[in-house]
Amino acid sequence: MTPAFGLSQLSLRTCDPPISYFMQQAVENPNLISLAAGLVDMETLPAVETRAHLQAILADSNSAQIALQYGTTQGLAELRQALLEHLCRLEGCTPQDLHLSAQDVVITTGSQQLLYILSEALLDPGDLVITAAPSYFVYHGVLQSLGAQVLAVPGDENGLDTAALESVLATLNDTERRRLKLIYVVSYFENPTGATLSRDRRQHLFELVQRYSRQQRILIIEDAAYRELRYEGEDLPSLKRFDRHNEYVALAMTFSKPWAPGVKLGYGFLPRELMPVVLRIKGNHDFGSANLVQHAALQSLRSGDYTRHVQQLVQHYRRKRDTLLQALEECFPKHWGIRWWHPQGGLYVWVVCPRKLDTGPSGPLLEQALREGVLYVPGEFCYPPGMPSVPRHEMRLSFGLAKQDELREGVRRLARAVARCLAMRNRPHST
Ligand SMILES: Cc1ncc(COP(=O)(O)O)c(C=O)c1O
Image (tube, rainbow, N blue to C red; front, top):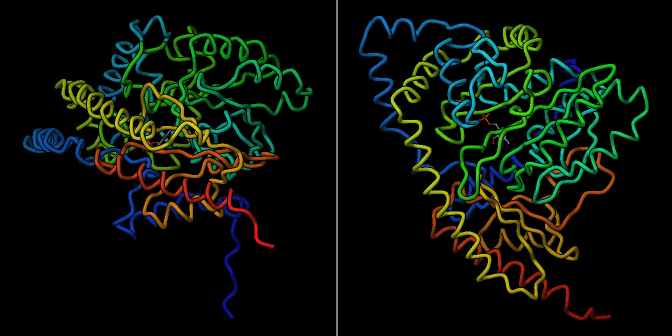
């Protein structure tokens, strides 16, 4: 018999994300309405603009040759400068206010790569990381793979509960403090809850990190993937805005949500000392993200197409969010005791059922939902690994991919599935 390969400890720790099964279901069953997929709306993808940008680059032999050659590991200098200006427009400040220059910007293959590289740069197996519970489950996979131990801090509609974080930090002993390397926060319209970290909590979180960075600096990874998709309310300053000397916060952003995930282009603003190590690791990964795509992204920013596109997206997704929320209001009667959070942006609505309604992968609701032809993400997938007890009565719904009528029909189907589960629970047991 042929012997097995000797897989590394890292491979053995790396699990299949539980959600892949769900994505597969959606692909295999075209009649299924997926309120699970965290994908952007196909209809919004900027095909015309991207074609024009690529044509402009490729029509000129000089620019074509430059774009089709390898670029640098850190990324196209003009694009880094344009992204710094973009961040400053969002923050309403100057690069000096943030103590940033284009040297502090790195272009990555999606923001996911930056999350991975930063974690790889800081974490050894057994090191501690703090995340909100629930939070972005793909990042939990990274942490598990690297052997990090996650300290989960609860979150609510105002994001990570920083008072709870303060209590957790206060209970760490010296060894644990030395092992605490980073805090991961999705600061706007979090995946999966849609929650945004409030202004006061931003301030508090930043102060805590400064206060507890005694023997060793704690890094905040601020993931702002959804920042530009805001449908109501005032934009808030990023955590990076509090980091006036560029010391504690690595801000990760992406073209995937506000432009197109197919370009798979992310970017980060990093504390200066982290850049060399990030570039060495990225050098090992790919020594630079796709150069042609970076040139196209630069065109989208310079031409104004990017800004126009984001404005259209905001209108489009606001309507879809409202449709989903209204459908929930109409189809889920109050006496069911089901609540949902009101997201001011992003792509997700977090639904909290009564505890008796098991939304988990082997629970009755998912089975009934699949029978009705609708899919959601069980909330328990969104909790970090190693938590002693995980809630089983929540779900993530997305209004990204489904069309308006599918959103309405999807919620109707989900309501029928819920009604059936509640009826089953209330049915007297036969003896
Ligand atoms: C919160 C969050 N961060 C990061 C990412 C990674 O996106 P990308 O690598 O396409 O930039 C996603 C993707 O869904 C996300 O939801």
